Image (cartoon, rainbow, N blue to C red; front, side):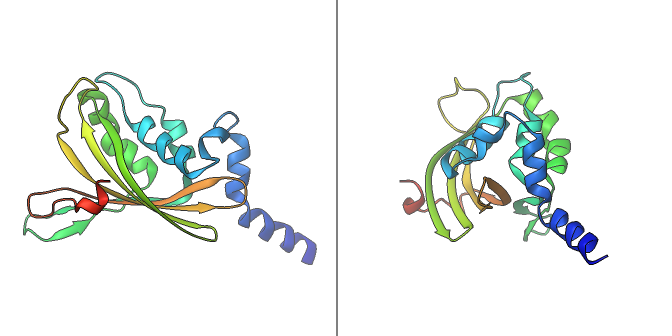
Length: 173
């Protein structure tokens, strides 16, 4: 009985690695910080009518990951919305397809402690690659876990730039 319990606990603790092994071909996208972040931006980006690779998108995220946009509510107070990767696909996927969207990283600051990585990634967004000016800019606060085999996105918490909240110069270089 004790051996069975130990096996069950082992499998529960290593579920993310089992998930990773089943997604043959995606492993190269999560081997280092820069590639993981670049893949995140590339997979949500595309011209109007271009299908996104949502399987690769989901592969980037830990099974319990959250995407957390900030915004103002009707009372003008800043709040957040917590989404799973599937929630993001269901709420934003059609819009991305119908309108076109390209998000480019223009700067990043990385902090690492053991298995924890924090990336402050400044971005600009375009509807098409041919656009000369972004329609939006902001900062993604991306937390990653390195489990010894790969990087997992744990959370992406972001805010768009506004007149009242411009991006500081130290996050633009």
